[in-house]
Image (cartoon, rainbow, N blue to C red; front, side, top):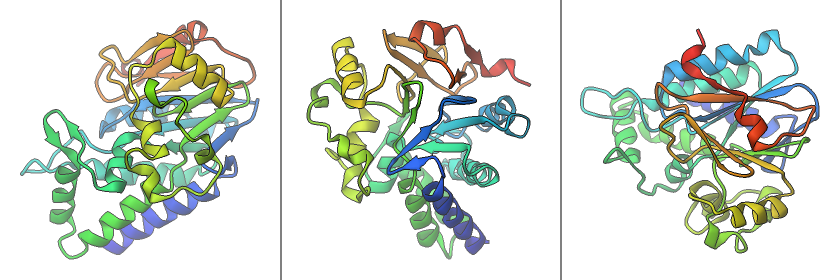
Length: 282
């Protein structure tokens, strides 16, 4: 079983790297079809299932889906270990079923797992919680499985750029790092140190509470009109956090998604009218 799991993760790595829409560390979607965007999942299996059901990729051959932050949250084992890696394995299977239309973007819990740094959620250090559960499920191969998980997370793209100038990523650099952020990270080979503070992938995935001035400058630097992000907790499942920013969350019962028509431009105000609550999906 451990080797089967490692093989699955390695297939997922290959699928991430060979996605036909990927250029460097960015997935570039054309001006056709649509993309379904979800926020942080954090082990919430039912919301993942709802995202999959809504996307209905089999019935919509020109539709894509973007998922993020699968790990750290959800069910626990008998000693409080985090079992979210089990959902990650199922998400990878989904990716393998449609490797050029299912896209996972790197989140801050991913960079923390890659770098081995502490990351807290609800008062618990999540890397330790997930590591202990892996030790119990794979007692003779947990080291190898953990390495394969880190390598899979590291293989994820950093962002999705749509031809209609919509930009999708987990977050954006915080205000004080807007000018310091090295946009070359999107085009060059990603390095492990990029996931450590103050590396470029770290800055991209950890920023919060952006001012409108910072969003406007990032729109210039990234050549985008509208940002759709996750990362920041949303009690209602989403919010419009700026003139050009929508934030989504999928890690609780009020989670939301949004579907973006790739054939036309959008404003945040327009996109806000297309938010779908996950609880409405059966």
